[in-house]
Length: 115
Image 1: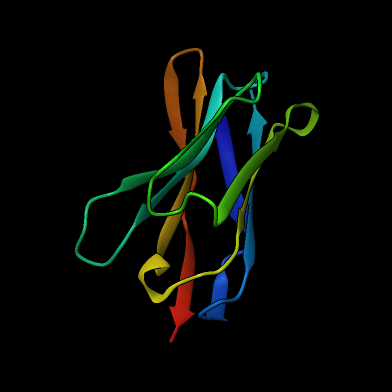
Image 2: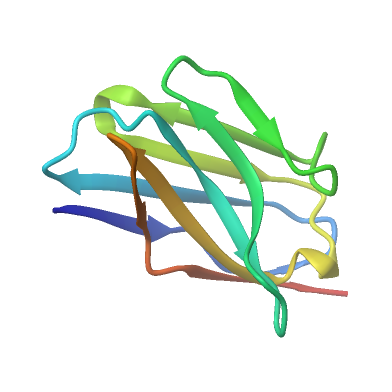
């Protein structure tokens, strides 16, 4: 079994920054892909960003140039640096990991951006 534990959410004013972390533990080697989804109130979960084990990254258009994803393969940890936050970034952010083709999810961490 694989567990993902997120941290770093909170409340911030528009224009501010937050850094999310997600550590994978359990029966896991370096996940092929790790990343983050966001779920806004009343909306479906949407991909924010992902990163492969080789460091290739992908971003949603809405966060390009504002968010930066990175990972530490030795620690099986993925990070999401969120800068220039906007009220529309308010959501629950879920970490995910692809381990041998199986997707695992974190419990979610709340991000609230006040205007």
